[in-house]
Every structure is written in structure tokens, then in C-alpha cells.
Image 1 (spheres, rainbow, N blue to C red):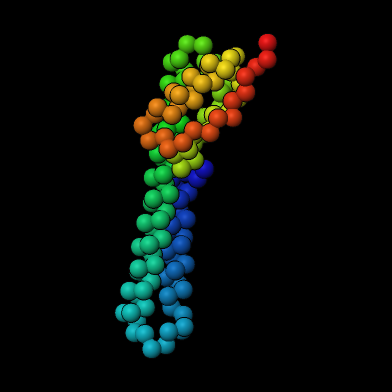
Image 2 (spheres, helix red, strand yellow):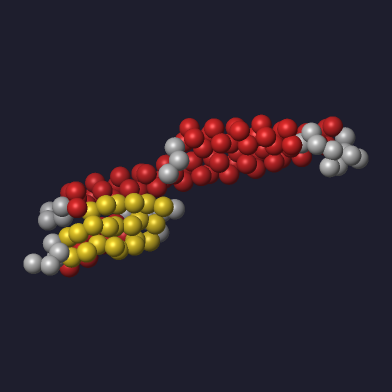
Length: 128
């Protein structure tokens, strides 16, 4: 997962590259102003996309933290044995639990978090 500063850096690099690309001669009939407008539109779209990706990464991190905290608060769940990963608001639970009821409880807790679109259950019940 990229950090916000990495995504901002990518957006800035892309903006500079697009500005340089706007100086080519593919559209010889275009005025300098038209080329600048076209380049500015491309930069704005790229920046908007990078900003959305950064916001999504922050949201996924917040969801992971909320799910981990809720699992930690649940008696019987050994949070060190449950890995939580979130990608595009889809939470994946992996690891092991002591019983099927605890597996179901972990999935239910993750599903109940506001903002979670889906829960992927990769939990394994330990055999006694």
C-alpha cells in the first residue's frame, strides 16, 4: 500500500511529465494556449485520481484499525492470531481461531463495521 506522500509524489511527477508532453508537435494547428489548456486538464485529472487513491488508502487503514480494535475487545478472540487486511473497503480476515463460533463472531464483528463493503473469511479453526 502506498503512503500519501508517495501518491502525492507520483501525482507531481506525472504532472511534470504531462506538462512536458504537452509541448510536442502532435497537434500543430493548436495554439500554445490550447496546448496548455489540454495539459492542464490532463494534470487535473491525474491529480484528482491520485488524491482519490490516497484518500482510499487512508480509509482502508482506518477500517483495518477499527476492525482490529473491535476484535481485540471481544473476549476469546486472540487478535495476535488474526490478521486483518483491507483493500477498497473489502476486509480480509486470515489466521486461526479456537472454534467455529469464534470464527463466526470475528466475521460478524468485521461485517458490522461502518464502511466495510465485504468480508473475506480466510480464518481456520484449530483442531483440538
